[in-house]
Amino acid sequence: MTDETRIRAAWLYHVGELSQDEVGQRLGLSRFKVLRLLSDARAAGEVVISLDHRSTGTLGLAETLRKAFDLKDVLVAPDTGNSDAATARRAVGIVAASWLARVAAGGPMTVGVGWGRTLSAMADALVGLNNPKLRIVSLMGAMVRTGPEGPIDVCARIAAVAGGQALFLPAPFLADTPEDAALIMQQRLVREALDAARAARHMIISVGEGGQEALLTSSGVIDAADIATLEAAEVVADTTGKFFQEDGTLAQVDLNTRTPAIGLEDLNRAEVTLLVAGPAKARAARAVLRSGIVNRVVTDEATAMILMEGKG
Image 1: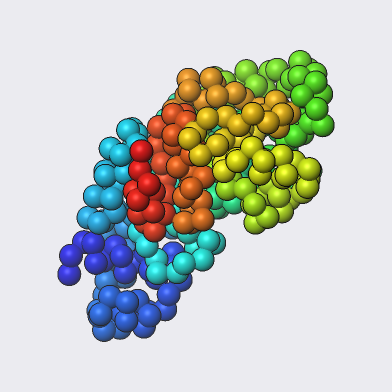
Image 2: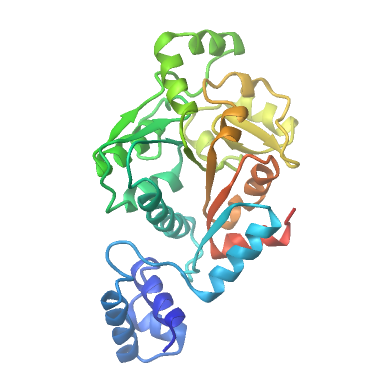
């Protein structure tokens, strides 16, 4: 059996949560051969708690996507066979966690993080990172409601695994007016947190796709009037409190000045990694990629293929 078959079998079983019989049906193998592949994957060090996601197919797709959007790096989680968004987030989270454990392992470093369910999945999957000199800082203000996907929770969980420090932006995600947001950003503690975020070597963000199913909407952060404004401005994506049109430009909406957060110029100074999980995010991800702020993408195989269909 090839390395790719072994890794795919382990991925389907451990991440896709398929039974051994289901893995065998998917790959055209007997249950005995699946058991042997899973055992070999563990012996080869590909399955510990995280999983070596690399395979010939995904590496080729990643390189094609990297060239298409002129990126520094692309990591693609293999297809698990399950089409639900939660599985895609878990797969992308595992790959992103493995990457973060490598880059943040040595010495003093500041990493800025956004919020969202995929970043939460990354925090869930993070193991093997021990760096007391690591500082994790939020790139925007907090949600009204607590939850594992909020910026405070994501920062705290990553820092706890590493034994490092978490730093939060003491501000709401969204202010009532641009004037209120400007006043909040003048506060000393907010300025200090923003300065720390701007010093981050790496920034890890996700993307919202708008609509009723989007986390910004379902969490109650934006109201009906805000949603109508975004629809009228043809907004298709948001990240770190900024709202984008299809071509990657900032939409002319006041929400872009009502979010106490880092700016696009801050993102452009750092190495930015975008986590994208699920085909429903592809259109929004493409808009953020066109903005030019992203250096690396971590996504799943199905979403990568859709991104390639509308490349450039």
